[in-house]
Each structure stands twice: as structure tokens, then as C-alpha cells.
Image 1 (tube, one colour):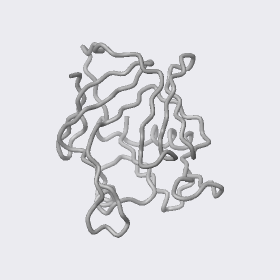
Image 2 (cartoon, rainbow, N blue to C red):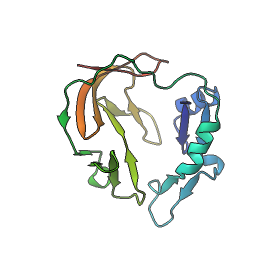
Image 3 (cartoon, one colour):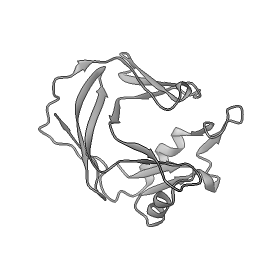
Image 4 (spheres, rainbow, N blue to C red):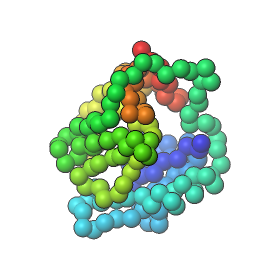
Length: 178
């Protein structure tokens, strides 16, 4: 895997990290990137979509610097519980995202009120963390705690696995069962 980041703009911190070359592939909509499509029938900023075939091709062609994920060979899945449907709640109902497990395809289908695409994921990872409004930020951006530790939910094969996440500044996330 290569580390890739697709975005439209970003915080000064994130843009600085991208400029420093911390990602293998920087896909930036602000540069009129043809891998993005904007649907003017949907209100901004929720009308921006990636063209997945173009992105997958570029990711496979990019040079890998460091592995984004590493796996233990001797890992055995902990006891999980059946979870074929779930919803992640955000600030308003129109921003909520729902998932339903499709047993035939072996993935979770994503449903969002503003999306027209049919997205399906084998793994969905949800981090329990803190989010806050950044002080003195005229664009009203949010801060998200991504260092330290917290709870994690892994949805896979129609099952929910609970665990913990851990991350030190400048390092990748580490996940473990409880």
C-alpha cells in the first residue's frame, strides 16, 4: 500500500504536512484535478466526488515509502458480535452515514443522504475520540484528537469487534483487541 491523501483544501497544518512530502500521493481538488467530479445539483461542499478508477490506478503507480498498514501473522480474531447494520451520527441527520452488510458481496454498503454512488467496504473502522471547534479559526474548522488512545470499532464480515486504538505523534495507528 502507498500512503495517499485525497482532499479539497485543508487546514494549514495538513497542507504543510502535504507540502513536506509526507504522503506518497497528494490528490488535491483545488488544482482542478480530473479525478474529482462536482455535481452542481447538490449543495456545496457535499457535492464533490472522487472517480475511483482513476484514483486506484494512480495509487497503484505511486512509489511506496512506508507501509500504511502492517499485520500480525499470528493474529486471531477476538469474539465479535453480529452487526449487519449501523449508523454513524454526525451533527445533523442529513450528515449521518449508514452501513448495511451485503452477504453476497461480502462488504458493507454505505448510504448517505447526499451521495448517489454505490460504495461497499470490507472493513469499516470507527475511532472513539474527541472533536472540538478550533479557537480563533475564521473558517470554523474542527480539531480531532488523533494521538493518545481510545476505543475502536471494527466492522468486518457482518460482525462488530471492539478494541482500542493507540497512536503517537508522527506514527501510524495501532489497533488491539480489549
